[in-house]
Image (cartoon, rainbow, N blue to C red):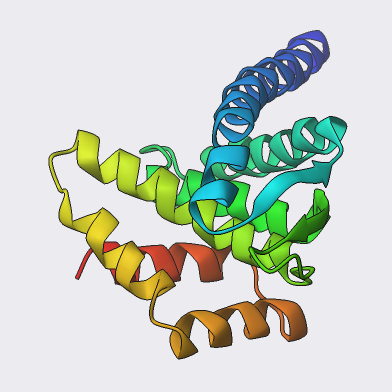
Length: 176
């Protein structure tokens, strides 16, 4: 009996590691593919300075959280939540060291903005696949809203803003 418990524990650990690695690879690929085009689309000029190793770390942290969450949510993890966790880790680990706008001025809150731009892009793509084109339009309106978008960025910098906040924000924009 004692041996079977140890074997089960080892199996769970191996499963967790394998699942985290698969999820990490998928998230890292999505992030690498999207990061520069999303920044260009939102007015960032030149090539932003960032460490490619940070992309791997962001994907690892998001994957670890998602796999851990899956233990408690046996019915599966909603795509909005997956992208919310990924966006949270972009903001938290701040992969962009330097980015400039069209005037050549530094964008000091680039990582907070990037996390929202990426969330909008990922969620819009997800909803478009599901046949709900209005999600992209709603996110675009939020990003262009000025005060509301800027207040959200401000809150991300100066207040506690966790992955659940990203999820609530994304769902409130897309599912209304």
